[in-house]
Length: 265
Image (cartoon, rainbow, N blue to C red; front, side, top):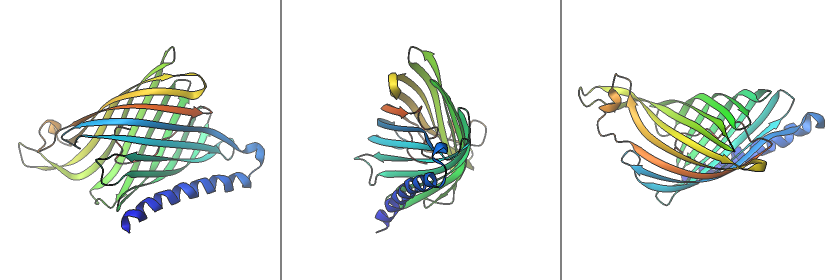
């Protein structure tokens, strides 16, 4: 069925990503091969509000960066979001290549997100930097989705900075663009829309790569015009709380999975 085909395509990307890492590793000298970083996390989210409804969800994510040469790496990430309120679970698989220099990297990604019989392809460029408890990650890309041609682009960034004694604070933002997506109440004008998720994060890191974190965020839509975000027909925001745990190996992977709809993760 179409419902199982989407999930199968995502899992196929995850399989070929792992196969590609093994194959690429076999093709270069052993001294040049290394795992640059890996991360695994689990989280529980509670969302309330009119925009996307009320629901509780759990998520699992994992990422791996594998060095092919001292300056080039390949890698990828997977993410799964599950909820009793969802008709279908969300599964994401992302593959990427990157140029690395010290604690930073720039690269390109290709991602497939599947939920039931709907598939979304995301691709673009990204950059990241990590040093101790501080990190930065940003991306910009295009979208090709079964949900419609109106969804055209996606972008996001996250920033964490250490404040001492194992604690760090951060900001996380991700959004996607929808052409002619909203109606302004005062004028009836149809405007392009941005669906955005803004969150504040607090993390406590233990020794040897383990950490726990909490996020408080808000999901809302706003239009292009001045003050349109306060006068959009039928749009109310949603808010969420996320509690999670993460383990980083070798400092952790630099990049997350690239996804359209797993807001609140």
